[in-house]
Amino acid sequence: MSFFEGKLNTLEDLFAEQLKDLYSAETQLVKALPMMAQEARDPRLRQAFETHLQETQNQVARLEQIGRGLNVDLGGHTCKAMQGLVAEGKETLSENATDEVKDAALIAASQRIEHYEISGYGTARHFAERLGHTEAASLLSQTLQEEQLTDTKLNDLAKGYINQRAM
Ligand SMILES: [Fe+2]
Ligand SMILES: [Fe+2]
Image (cartoon, rainbow, N blue to C red; front, top):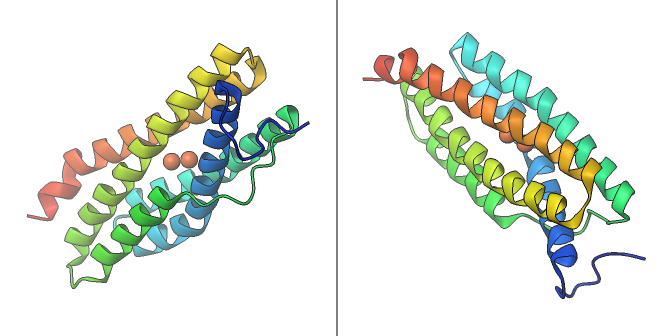
């Protein structure tokens, strides 16, 4: 039995749809993060993107584990919001910015992405808890925490010296 047959009748269906959306978002990020790391000029910023790429690969694996456990096929859906967030980030980078401004722009784009993910995982985790999917809730919590820590790290870099240097 599949939880999601194209119709949203229950919270369970909506949960499955949210998982598919997150899966699409994360797989897009696995492709985008190497480019962001490559574009970063500050070594700590580059390291932050590289670390988050590894985490993001784990996050994809966690979603796959949840999908297997709940018999939800995660494929066949495109997260248009993440497409837009990545496209906007690329657009900014294609403008003629100095290295310092580029680093600030990369953080601006990636914090939008992290906030989008934090929102999505917060909702999905609550749905999982409400539906009694304990293992899924715990896996979603782990990812949510990684997204929050990444956002904090980016915030610290921006406020610590990267924005100042871009002035
Ligand atoms: Fe993520
Ligand atoms: Fe993230």
